[in-house]
Length: 395
Ligand code: AMP
Image: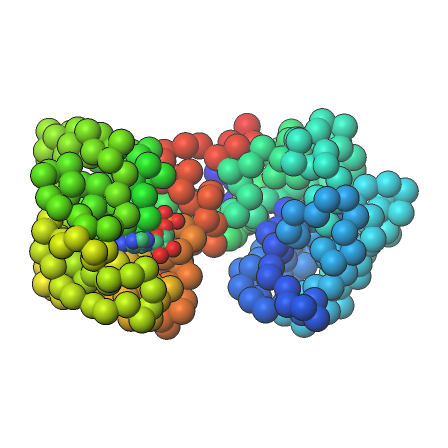
């Protein structure tokens, strides 16, 4: 892994793939600045070394040149977060883009227009990648959120920078955090997997069985397991087609010495809504007309005791329908237990869409060791895949 500090930036023009795919409101103002803030250390470092920066990003999924998705809307936010004047180029490639990038002086920053105005970007088009490569003299990838895509700017253009490409510091931290859990994790290692469906987590579960000592399964996945074991699940979300697979998994885990922990009790609702009536059931004995929507209090206590014994913790996926405040307690409780364990010295990584949203929403973020910025990229890393964006930097 070639790091930022191993690359010379003096009088170089660094073309940096950042992930500025930020949410905008109706007035086209940025509503969550995290992605810009997390790119700041890399940009600051390059400027401090006497380089200039050309920033490349996508924003949303435009169909052609959709003015609502122009990166022009975020220029002032980027300037204010970086504390430097950022100029904008309303092209990604072309004469204007070449002229504006070529005239950059050390210390200057230029944000290019939305990469995805060009369909060639997501296609990983060779010619487009070559055009992008002409925008800078050094290539830096700091966009973990798109590192699992073999797009022109995230992967293909890297080959034009032999000996002059490196990881940005965000990408480096993400890779280190994943390795700290999956490769060098101090035992006991626990993974907590929640979310809606077993079918979408199969590859992750399989891959984790080789890496963890304990696996806590929560959320809607629970009911496929309990049904497979002969339990009754009422109206709970369940994938009967995956029951055999669930049993197989339990066997595999046993053979590999991994302890699987399912909730012993659940909080069920008589409707899929926040205002549903609530009742606690044993997780394998849910009455007709009720559906399990959250982990129960006994389960949360058992999970807490286990988590507090662990030195390495990975969390992906909520333990219940946390979007309903009345069914969020299991997710909050797991987050609090992880926070407690982290305070006692464990390393905790939270990654993948909804669990990240949950820790932020419930104010638990500062209590975790590391929160991943990449949804899909994190999930694919947990599946054990080598991300194309990362492979391209190491070639
Ligand atoms: P995933 O994208 O697979 O991680 O799933 C996240 C979603 O799972 C969230 O929107 C949760 O509301 C949902 N979820 C968690 N527990 C349950 C449950 N018991 N029943 C239905 N949906 C659930």
